[in-house]
Image (tube, rainbow, N blue to C red; front, top):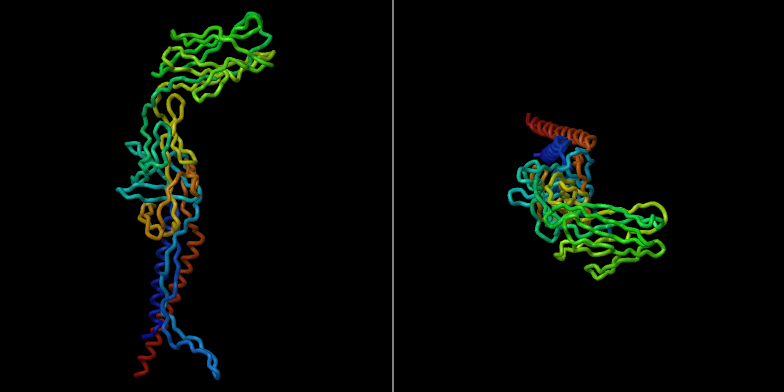
Length: 408
């Protein structure tokens, strides 16, 4: 039989496979996180008609004469170029801006994906649309240990965090040097004990005999501070002072209203004494009552931050990303998931924004990177290639028919 007949058949097969790949790309033009595939052709073995000849003294060398035996599909490569961002406004939708894959656990198998259309299930786990659990590092008291094993990302709504006792208060502003003698200024701020109980701390600044003093009271029967002298030099406060837990000298005072050793550091370093207006105010305190989780946000570094009913924020978990030396070596397993292979390299897991990984964008998903203009062009190329190989087969058949007719 004619070699051209079988070459044409191989061409039909190869271009049919190209059509299959192209049609799958077009079918997934709106699939979140989909990466387009591309076909690569290569010729098959060639039949040697005449070997190469070496140059001789009386005769030059000759090149080999070979007849190709067709074409084959050499590879189907995955194009991991970044897809466009599609804004959804859903806080659980996350897009990777840069390199990396989300790590998910599906039926006790670790898989990887670029599709960040996530949801929370009834147990508070962050999952893919098919139920695979998104992996990361849970936080303990707001601290993430990235050296710990990966686990399911959870956001248990209604979780109660313990109250925080006030152990630091900051007071700042100006005490007028030209205040009436005597006079007083009263300010208050809410503070909290170890059980989350709220108290009202009062601060009374008294001006008498050209000097300022400070009275403190927790409003709950605790031991007050009375007549604490405040000293100023050129309008800047210089005393009182105390030594903090690190041995550093600070301007302010330590107050133990309950007598239990639970000191409150009162920072007075922001006070001044200039002629003019009165601006003294308590700026902040670090206590908080018990609170429940109400909402959340996802930061660019992958931290899942819970927002609690007392207004405080605390890191609940951190999403993990993985990267590979050869991402096209990953195996597609459906549902926009990929599996590790021996040619992809080992997964290199790290936090978003570190180790060459991209950052996260909450409220958006990565669209398919299929280029419709290119895919329709590939359709035409595949169709014309198929037609041309079909013509080769029909022409080869005509030649065989002529040979058969020689007998007549």
